[in-house]
Image 1 (cartoon, helix red, strand yellow):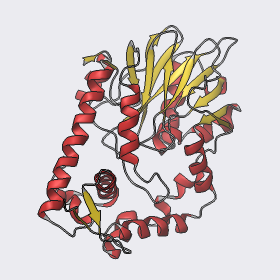
Image 2 (tube, helix red, strand yellow; image 1 turned 180 degrees about the horizontal axis):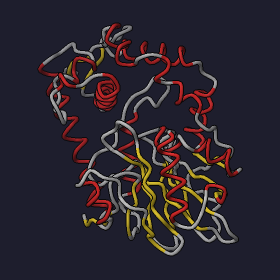
Image 3 (tube, rainbow, N blue to C red; image 1 turned 90 degrees about the vertical axis):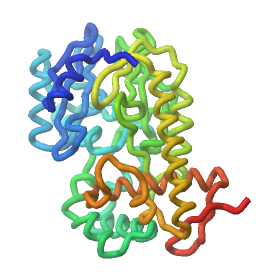
Image 4 (cartoon, rainbow, N blue to C red; image 1 turned 180 degrees about the vertical axis):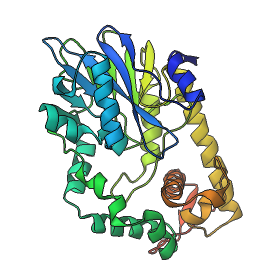
Length: 349
């Protein structure tokens, strides 16, 4: 794999934001910070459109600092948020969709997503924050969390309120649709797994591949079970990886970290990572039969000691563990006790 986003990579190493960069005629990358998150920023891609105006791919985390970064970045390339005609959203997460409502209010731009994520955002917009908290707590208890720890990790309704006010899209993009960005040929590639409606975009004239969170150069994106999500999200993710592996791509432009070449090599590395993780989890289930996903997460290898995991980091780890358990079950390797809080053991052969 070859790093092509050298300024992005250097900024990552120095723990700073990368610069606004012009990548091609009429195409720029613009970093928007993510508060209190090890990913540090999301890359918004900005397209100059025939006939005037700009198009955005993703918008950044909704915060005053994020809004300032987005508007200052647009000013740096000679534009403004009022020039935005349309917003493509790779997926529903807050660091990608968060600022879309402000952009739309300021510019009148349309907002487009895949129907699966659009449906989820619409449902969230109709949900009271207290109800969202209660649903997530119930889901974690169903994965084996002690009720008091589930409530502590999810936190109060104020922690989710912003997520329930995200922009409901007014346009839908299915797999294979070409986005309405004049002078560009951005074909939507449905890549479920990270979210049910995750979209990548293949720019057919240049060979550029905007991979969102689907393929990142350094880490594997979180693939988790959710109370409203897919039954087997990791199976979907691995299938989506295989689906993009052999695309004719000149450069990969992800939403985090840095640009690179070598899509097939990176897909192979991500696939191998998950197969190794599945093997580690299978061994943990064998060593600790009758465990819940909450229990099993503590027996896996993480980037820091398990005792340091709490709140949203622990939720992500446990729900990611559950996604791997579901795939093992789908492969017929483990079996569930059933009941309100299922436990898992190796399936007898």
